[in-house]
Image 1 (cartoon, helix red, strand yellow):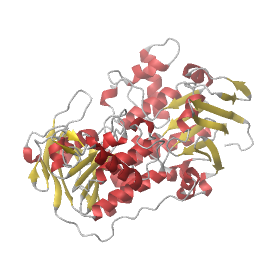
Image 2 (spheres, helix red, strand yellow):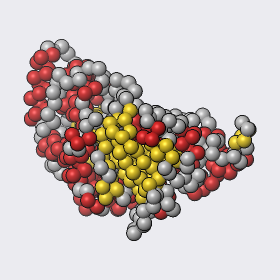
Image 3 (cartoon, one colour):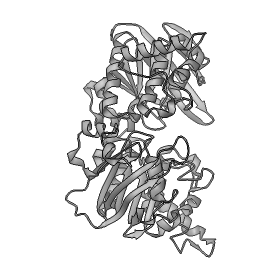
Image 4 (cartoon, one colour):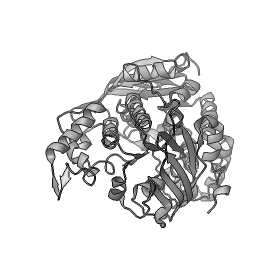
Length: 510
């Protein structure tokens, strides 16, 4: 990066208002050609709003963008791409029924022959260390390979600025390292990169500068290489983040959750079949399941929670009782609790107030709360209030609707609601997905403390930092097959990455 070069892009006093919310409040930053610039902040700090304006998907309420020295209104994503601004979103925009080349063609202007485009895709993807088969169907590609399609689609448009939103959240450690090599090469060729990530250690390794947002405002600019993850987290949160204390010398109790040759059929063309899943989770331990998104995590959660029933009743055992044919409510009566990945719509009803959301998972197990079809609203409110206080759920009124909470606060509520039951078994899918550092630390410590009390805790997570922080044992899921759960201390990032890529699959073939 040429430190004396003029900025490629400047955001000049950008304000974006949605109703009464100032999502961006007088934000100014600059990005230079050849620079890898991190954009950091808690969930809800205004990062996504800012980059959507840079990409033309939103318009600022006030302020201006300056592109290559000239003020410019970026009216649409098409205009942004024509300027040389490319963006790879956290959630991909690909048609699964089409090939890689066909998906790429949809975003490119002008006319061209598909065989010519396929040749360009093959050459460019190989040149940048992102090998890609243009004829492959998106439905058959891993999540990491799908990300390559998105990146190659941007690179074919010769971007001057490439925006990446949480790009390593769907990658194995090996794939992430290859991505870093590609990004460093792009920067060396003069491409500016705006990099959004909650993984602060990789920000230290990769980025030249970082701008930190908090509550819509710029609160710091720093050189990540001169900081620690803790110091950057402090900038993001505004205070020290609680340290998580894992179980030390805790004695494992009996097996509380057992999966025995659990097999399920794929529910549709794009879901994953589970194949001979075997797993024991003891009381007093946290077992974590790692894996790249889309490898059967959701299907496994549904099969354990009872949203998908097992073929064999004894494929799921809860405290020794066969529960494979039981639905969700019966499994809760066995002492189990479940926190799904999707908090708004699956874990909570958006239009329900929090006290009504508390009823959803308690009506079948709490006789005081619900008896003979009659709900005791006072007890429901008391439960919600207990959770709100215990987990510091920030809210605007006494009993707000679920949809009015930020993602992190709703996640604290949905996890806290289940922990308040003091379950014997807890299964949680992506416990801290999209939440800020402070909320993540609160949730992780609560999971550890539940295990210390004698419960069996099973965590499904894509966040390897989280897994190594809280897990006693780790298993890896890939294409619906689960590796053996081994002590966390026996794993390295390299070993876990190989398993995430499917190294264990042959021995687990159905």
